[in-house]
Image (cartoon, rainbow, N blue to C red; front, side, top):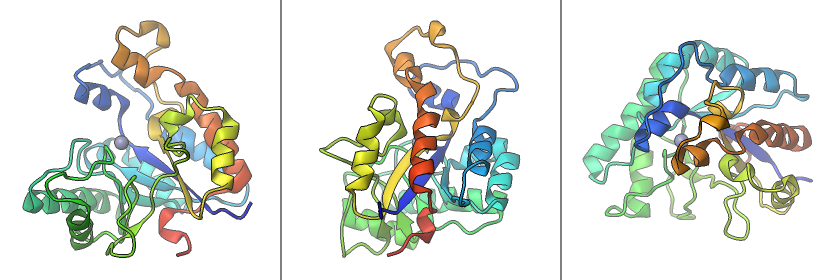
Length: 249
Ligand SMILES: [Zn+2]
């Protein structure tokens, strides 16, 4: 078991995600974000693991105290865009969008941001992957974690999310449905580093109960969520975790 593992968490709001899907659901007052649950879980792990937090810029301010606490405990902060929308197709607009996402988080947390993950893992179609990678470097990023790979020509390091047999087993949303052994088997046979991703709201956020499900979209976003933190803990206990910015080349 020599595979290095980077556990990453996309820090975003479940309710905002539902609004983007066209299914707005009112956020209860005092709703928990899940980040305190994540911090507690990490604090109880052995060998001081570090994770990378890909933070949506326009959400960072509402969870700043929790983010600051995680950063002070040595976890890495990265960008998940200024908002959770699609990447602009126009190169000038895309560059500005990428820079904005980075500086929003840097300004709030007061730490340099080196990594980027697009909200939907998309590549702007009209630009193509190579140009997109160039723009990431121009926007000041050193690495990107998505599902594409340009290879040696990429000016930013590529840390794609773990896939196995065409399935994105590194994704927390997939891990709700997969037997745990499928995840650990994929990690064991992956080249280093194996990058897995989760969502901040999977660690004890205040979410609607499954009995309030009234649409397929809502069902998709709620079913099995309770399993995810358990899978994360199991992977963490077995492999530990390094931040994406700290893994060996
Ligand atoms: Zn996201």
